[in-house]
Length: 523
Ligand SMILES: Cc1cc2nc3c(=O)[nH]c(=O)nc-3n(C[C@H](O)[C@H](O)[C@H](O)COP(=O)(O)OP(=O)(O)OC[C@H]3O[C@@H](n4cnc5c(N)ncnc54)[C@H](O)[C@@H]3O)c2cc1C
Ligand code: SF4
Image (cartoon, protein in one colour):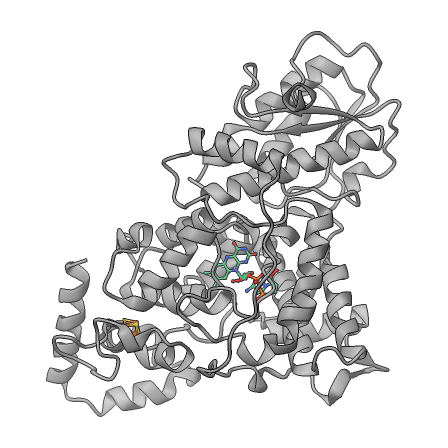
């Protein structure tokens, strides 16, 4: 019964004349989308399409596929209940052609609309498709901007003008002022812009992470889970623990849960890692934000309100708002300003193939196996796990940027290229040579040991720098600095390690390089 309502079989032109064919893509699931502005339920049709191409251009984690398809189906139902005519092409519709562009052509024939309307897509790849739709359908295509973000693409491009480097912190302060968030008159709340120095604590052994709200799959989600298991069984990731919100109502409940259970200690422990506790005090809101179930504005407003009402301290609230108003907006700006060449960057000339344990988690390095295991189970890991464990390893090992970038795009529920690619290329593996980060986020095992409880039961010894049984992050770190000396030694933020290195005799440096090479060749 439900499926018949979702699937509209293609036939001849629409009986009622269609004014606008309004297209909603899988990450545009908000009633506030600019493409729905002025929607006339009598004259317009909303088109939504589940296509193989969007699920397989990289082999997405099964949970990401379920998240997007289930949320699309729920959103279509919400629109229908409002009286909107929705043409929904399901993945298993026998006439489904498998790609967005060919589905647009079919829909244009079906409805003969006067015009197409689609909010600018989040990814370059999709924008290139959209730009062909006018010629292919013979209809005018309106592409209004995506207004869910605080900063338009033009606003970010303006900000970069005349700047040699683009530091997030400078952009963030402008956003705080411009949007009057966490401000007291024209001063930052609490007198400081940034409370990061208070936000780098390891988790005390006695501190138990809070239970987090997860959502049991409803009928719609279960149907999509069965579809995903049948069609995408070979993709990375498990489905058993699927718990992401797929409706706006549940996304709002997830936000509320974070504000009470996570936010008060988010700041203190945002960099901490603990075996068996992948979520800690993080918000888990990126999947809902990225597909449109929540808006960044309402999330920041809820966090600010928690501080103003005394429910959360300023270091936590500022730290959290910086992630969204600062990092998320900045990353999107970088993406749209530097694409499409950005994806080709490889400033450190890294060429190694991605080790197979990124897919299996099968490695004695406990930090890596733990993070990859959680990723497989939840399609999630938090920022420091991505940056300082899997990202750090790829950087130190010299994995080719394109390979690690495609991996991140494949394995997370929140992975969309506009946010994933700059984080991977710019932050994790320094492939842009410092456009975003002032130095590579390279670290030895000591960092992971300080911020986690992984090392205690690892097969390797984090205190041992070289030799059998030494933590690989230790010698890989020094071998990386030796290998990249010509490119990085002049970086003032790396002055200290390069000073240490300059005190080591050539034989010691050669021995470290040989040990690192032997380890990497054995992967
Ligand atoms: C290599 C790498 C790849 C990443 N790929 C993605 C991705 O595909 N999609 C994605 O949404 N985030 C990505 N991030 C950023 C960040 O890791 C995730 O946003 C975060 O872990 C999501 O979990 P959370 O919602 O619990 O975040 P929280 O820690 O609770 O942070 C709150 C929110 O801030 C935003 N945010 C935080 N850090 C960043 C950041 N660096 N860039 C952009 N937004 C940020 C997210 O919307 C997040 O939901 C990546 C980071 C790295 C280092
Ligand atoms: S000892 Fe090294 S490899 Fe093992 S968990 Fe610690 S940092 Fe990771």
